[in-house]
Image 1 (tube, rainbow, N blue to C red):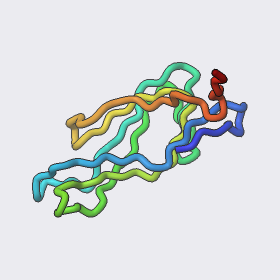
Image 2: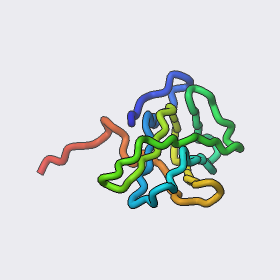
Image 3: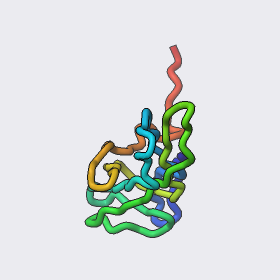
Image 4: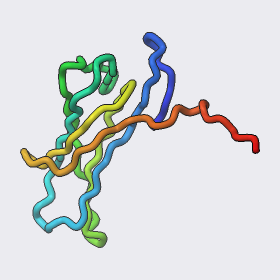
Length: 121
């Protein structure tokens, strides 16, 4: 993940290069080839780009999380997306296995790099 100044309009961007979900334990024979990650609601003015394509605020967007090879020793499977996602604020997401939601949450930058102040006691 990276925080940087946007080149278009000077907006602050939060950049995500990798998103993954680890599932453990998994049932042998039940591993899907992908999960679906949906980016949901955003506040008006929050910009979202996926692979350099701007997503309108009124739209949701989806990414495929493709399965990595199963680790049978650890009994886990990992689903990965390497699409580049950039957002200027908080964005909600959900992860689906077929039509069943298995995970939901939000991504938000909680600290702006370079703005921390040192206390002098």
